[in-house]
Image (cartoon, rainbow, N blue to C red):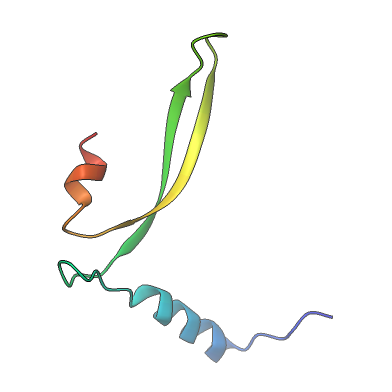
Length: 66
């Protein structure tokens, strides 16, 4: 049987996830779902690669300006 989750447990978990701090710039780290398309040279078709990336002030230019 599944374990019951209370509202308090859900709130505590979301606050723990939201409170991640970058050790370099001391800013909050936001997690984004990064999806990019990759072309297969042999068949000419496309596929999608998905990643979850932590973004803060010190690495947002590297991620968004590709």
